[in-house]
Image (tube, rainbow, N blue to C red; front, side, top):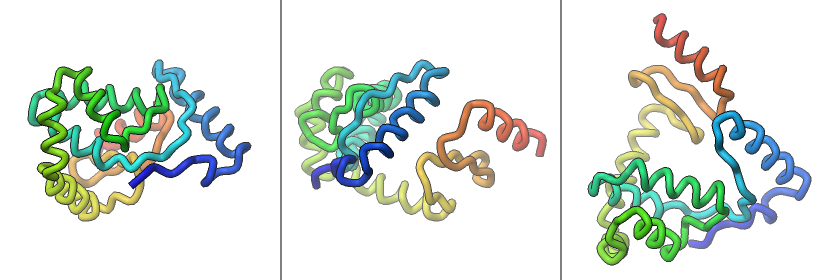
Length: 154
């Protein structure tokens, strides 16, 4: 499944506002958002992340994938992009391609989705603390800190 063009979903002024908001929120954290033109079908990238997890490279692969999409505007729903990211993260692209073709990690994604549904996740991102407290959506850093302080006091 191909990704959806953002220009087909949002009028130009709204896209501009979205980019400005992302850049404003990312700046204090050192995150520089680029121009994203497509909403990818990220299923392959999610399966590849599970492959990376099994090879002790989850964090670095996740970071590389995040930057590829949000900073570089690459379509992480395309197999060649995912395999390139894996190669740059010292993962075996041939073995990963075989794992993706064989849907080796599909069940993990199904299980994770079910767990999210069980926990009431309806938006991304959702942060769940101790299986009972949630923080939903992208929040400014101070809002996150305040919420975490409130949870810690309980």
